[in-house]
Length: 402
Image (cartoon, rainbow, N blue to C red; front, side):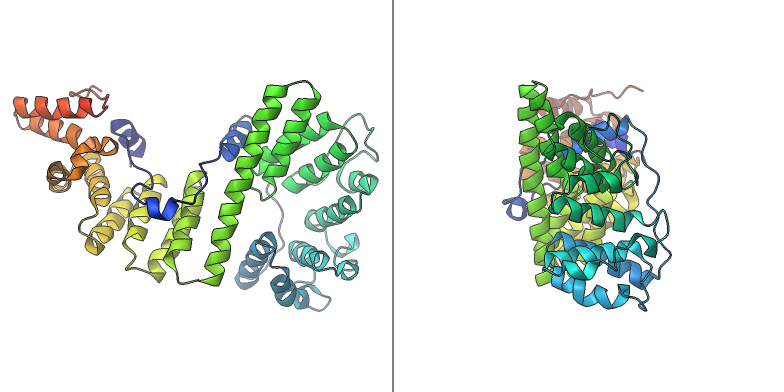
């Protein structure tokens, strides 16, 4: 479907008309956008190796990772420790072991991690997960030489070049960067932090990387750059705090629709439309009567290239709330894009008699009315509709030229 053509045709609203759900959201951060620009010019890392595991265990490990990020360590220990100990079904799963070890350390039980993190227990290249945890523990006790020995080819901060081990694991770059920063090597730290951002711009520790970039800029005398990165650092922290708050609310109130709507909005902010769509799929399955969920699902489907699915979602939204002008507008525009003029007329022309006709975000109504009138030989009506379109800020020509 030619969704890019639609975006060029008229301004298409993204998550419009839900101010009550979004009132407490931070402004859309530049953090991930800038990191994505960095990543676009660099080759990506090789995929991270993961051991074979059942679908049930894969879901459990994904859940432990979120629990770790939210600081809910007791839940990770309770569910995971029996599985990763010797004799458990995940005893050779380094990713699972690393997550459980991190939770144990957070709960003051670091002495129990020695066997879990033993390098000889796991094969390469999957060992990277537990090596990163060993490096994290070394950094926490300020043993920087141990960090360098585990993660780099250098044994001290004075090494001239830095060759990162487990280079496809983003955290290898960040942990090494943090050690170099503490040893006064701001330039090296900044370069490693930049690569971390290229590999994982949505990582929970992304704000730390922007802080290191700010310090590196300051060290080389680039004060504007330092200030710019410092602002982005704060934006990243705000976005992550909002994301985590919504995830905690979902765990506390799994059937409430608003936390899921807020979480989807977070992912939409950073243009991760697939994750937003997955959250919204869950939302409408749990609360099909929550009309706004269908509207947002339509937008997420549109932005992931599913035009027919978007129209279906907006149809559900209108069945739920026939007064939903945004869903009618969006559905009509997609019908127009697909050259279904009759369906577009049904949705868009009645909007001329509503408050939507004065909304600059919905000026596509008037462009459609103008071109539809021109198509039907009604030149005066076309001119009037086009004049309204221009008055509201429209820039497209009345006659579309290929």
